[in-house]
Each structure stands twice: as C-alpha cells, then as structure tokens.
Length: 250
Ligand code: SAH
Image (cartoon, rainbow, N blue to C red):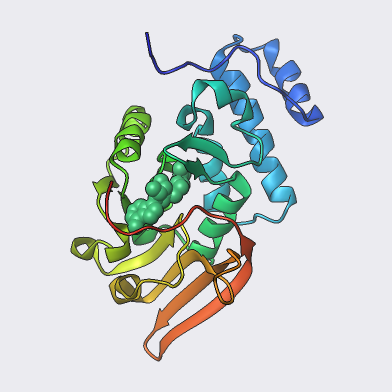
C-alpha cells in the first residue's frame, strides 16, 4: 500500500538547541510527531538566521511550512538539512538556504505581503507553499505533469486558497495573471525569457538562476531584474546550481 508517510518517530536532532528545546518541552506537552518536526524546523530556520536571513516574513513562513511533507518517505530524515533532495523525474527541491535567499531577494524589504507572484517550476510544491504566505496571490507553473500532480497532492492538506497550480510551459509565463509584483524561477536557462520581463509590473522584481558567462561551462548565477519606469535593471549575484529550464510540457 502506498500512502503518504507520517512523520517518523525519530529525527536526527543534530544541534544541541533542538535537543534542549525538545527536552524542555517533553515535560509539559504530549510527545507527538509534530512536536519533533517543529523543533527540528525551528533549528533549520535558526541556522538560516545565523547565516544572514533577516526578512521577518520569510523567517515566519519557513517556520510555518513543513518541508518534510514535500519529500519522499525515504528522505524525510534529511528534510531539515540544508541540502537539495530528489523529488522524482530527475528534479530536485532546492536547499532551504537558497529558497530563503531567493525569497528575501524577491521581497527586497517590501513591507507586508507582495501582490501577485508567478513561480516557474512548482516541483514538489514546497517553495510555492512558502510563497503563498508572502504574497496575496501565487501562480505556480510546472511543465511536468507528474510533478504538477505530486505538488497538488502535497499541498492539499494546507488548503492555501491564494495558491494556484498550473500545468504548462512556464517559459511563456502566465499572461492571464500578469502583471506580477514578483516572478521567481526554480530552473535556470540561457537567458531570462522575454515573456517574464513583459509580464512583470512596473516596480516588480524577478529572481532567477541563469547561465553565467558563455553558458557552455554550465555555470549559473542568481539574477535579479528590477522593472522601473526608467527601464529594466539587471543585477547578478552569487553562483547557484539549479535544474535546467526547459521548453514545452511533458
Ligand atoms: N520550487 C521547487 C523546485 C523544483 S525544481 C520545489 O520547491 O520543489 C524546478 C522545476 O522546474 C522542475 O520541477 C522542472 O520540471 C520545472 N521546470 C523546468 N522548466 C520549466 C518550464 N519551462 N516551465 C515550468 N516548469 C519548469
């Protein structure tokens, strides 16, 4: 029988802080599976904060969304490590520090939530869930039917009314939802598709991994594009490693 796994009774609590927190709480609260997952997740976010994550909304959203529910049962004990993990069909869920970094760049200090946001590459749906807590409306598009369906299943329990999952080629963006306050891509191509820049609102920001330099080397960097009344400004940030952005559906 293939059923969604529940959280395992034992997680690798590698940091003292989580262990202390768990010990402190065991006396007062019933020992549930959720309690273990919560402590380990707080620990993960604590590490991200130590590494420089400051945006309070991103911090709260990453504390809130249970990453272990988005990975396969065999990988659940790695869900709160800062590592990317396979999600099937040759794709990966990004590592938490990269998700946090990109979301922080996308929000760039916006007070309150962003307006409408487009995510290209739903994958398992984890980042889409986090995003749904940071924006009024999220459109997330995936080109692989298998992952689109998987994300739908993973997200069902969260009942996120402002998150819309779409099956299609995200290289074309999603014109019906435009203009977007933010566009974020979880797959990297040779260049930023024109459709994305066209569908960005004035004052909007796009964050995506893109080929750095000639592209042949397979090197990627995070690119931020700001669209203003005066035009489009592109800034290149640190090197990253994402799965390729592909055209068409499959
Ligand atoms: N944010 C995702 C990461 C998924 S990996 C998560 O949290 O799991 C990137 C995803 O982008 C893959 O699922 C891949 O199939 C998808 N992708 C690649 N090119 C795409 C395109 N043109 N349109 C939509 N999705 C695309």
